[in-house]
Length: 271
Image (cartoon, rainbow, N blue to C red):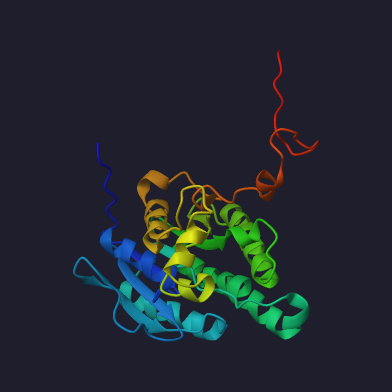
């Protein structure tokens, strides 16, 4: 039996929802029938549309608490409610910590941890006063679950974001559910900057157990589910969207005929 999620009448905000993963999330929500407001510092090259429906754009720097508060005040006046917040805005340039310096590291942590907390606090004020409460989804990263060389402050911020989501899920229950999506590699319009040409992108995708990178809309589908009734008992959860994760490096280095102690490989046994 097919399961269709209908978010008609729901109002959703997606930060950084104008390109890449954010645009994929926006399109998935539009497909599900939600009314979507996207915010970013710069407008999209063209409106985000899906199935004949268009997301509304508002310019916003989520690192500015006063601007964030004013944005949600306008949203309350124009839409009357907020059912879903997706904290997607974030990111980081590549740079070793010792070379990038303290100021750059602080800005990265601000964008990826402090700003989502600021946005969530303003969303909370709307959600807690309305019937049905609301749902908040943090867009995390596998970088926050493992070493993140070259993007250390980003990985640390994403680890903190996941912990923040778990804490808010307790503090704001039962009215508001808070969850995290832990994204692995996602193919976007900027993938060539990180992985090179199509051959390079495909080669990197083959390192994933499922054989490819995720598509942005697949993160969006998870957001649609977390905003829906069937997910009504899911809160404080971290859901990995990484195609099976990363193949352990030791598997390629090990001699399968002479396994080294401590590799974690199980030996035959009788109980």
